Length: 287
Image 1 (cartoon, rainbow, N blue to C red):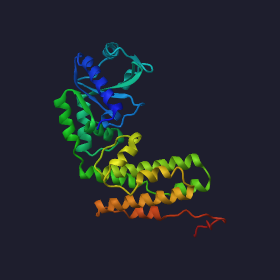
Image 2: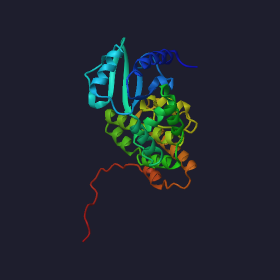
Image 3: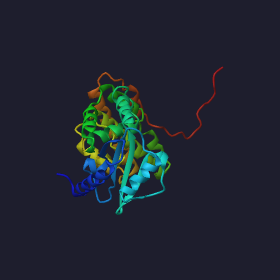
Image 4: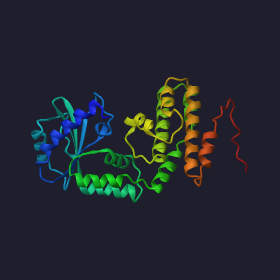
């Protein structure tokens, strides 16, 4: 059942689309972000990607703002191709994208196996977006975005397994540097999340929706969303121990899905413990 925060924003976006389609060159319009994902709350903005044959010039973009009875939230930023607007007090973000650019991203991810987070998020957007105009184009993209090549999954997993280590957490805890400790803790949780997204053949919904995405995953360590949150309330030692357990459990999930993958180096990193040295070591180099 659609939540009320999403529903009225979708209705509002449909009204805006009726004004937008009057502009030449627009081939498709969709709703994206938290509204399309049905994650919206009372703080959510409305994200509307607009797909053009060619990008609109400054005059056209300013004309769109006038047609929507809107104002720029900040200063106009032409090169950014994103117009952040205020309409009746609600933030509405218009993304200006060419058809050719969207096609290029689909090709790069699905056939060339690019996995930068921006491209992966573009496919997540296509999977869940709500078409407002150009239904045939959008549905064609949505069908293609349901694919998730095995080669892409394996490359993503291998990339992020390289960060699986609690060595840095241990050192930061010993030095009582909470700022750096929790930054590294967050980084490791994000790396686990990216591996789990791949194992679940899910694209990147941004870290903003990490917990929503974890809830819907079938393949994941037990109670991982609760354990992620608890790590920020636990002692350093407890946070390190459970983070190491989650890294190991995620690695086991990888090995179950990819038994042929060489994970020996990841196991070595997870097993390594940084030792303290009270006396200088012998640094003499033999002749």
